[in-house]
Image (tube, rainbow, N blue to C red; front, side):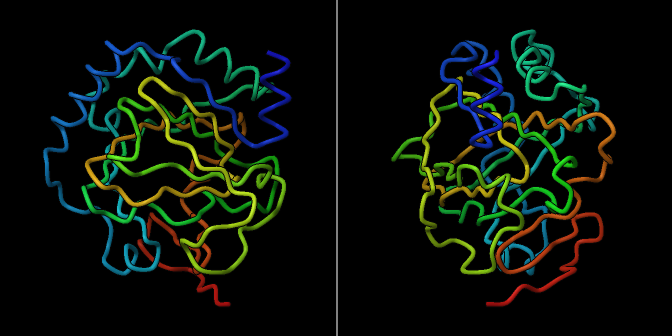
Length: 232
């Protein structure tokens, strides 16, 4: 656990392969696909999608009283690692399933919350219910140590950055990712699903992820508006 703590806080993320077994992942993947269908409607405005290059459709199952993902949410090892990373306690923020249509853009570089205060952030606990590979597209790209770098620099929303790390998670992989760490998702060639069991350190405002930082804007989800244009 000490090694896990040190690696996460040095790099801003840590990856565990084969964390959850195939049978559970297959069951959950089928359940998520059943909810979305093959061609769900976009949740966000055309303005947001065009400027953010974020073509991802979210589902918050516990808000719909569906739940049904407790084998992850209440997994002892999963939560023990969370305890190790967030030593002063933590709260569940929400569980979010993310669906990308075939041929969609993925997600441009972003930070999940404004990095003004290093003590106020969210922790992404990403779970992959199917393989992300060359056929599916949708690899995740992370900038190591960027959780200590301040705000995401202004620039082209999707261009490569020197030092970035590209990862293609396999089924059952878990990624713990600091919300201030720059990250993006490459375009999806086929249907892509990922799950985020998002938590926050104790005392963090519940709306911490309401404003997301992109290279070309800051966007407020609760009011569906661009609150700051960022130019280069």
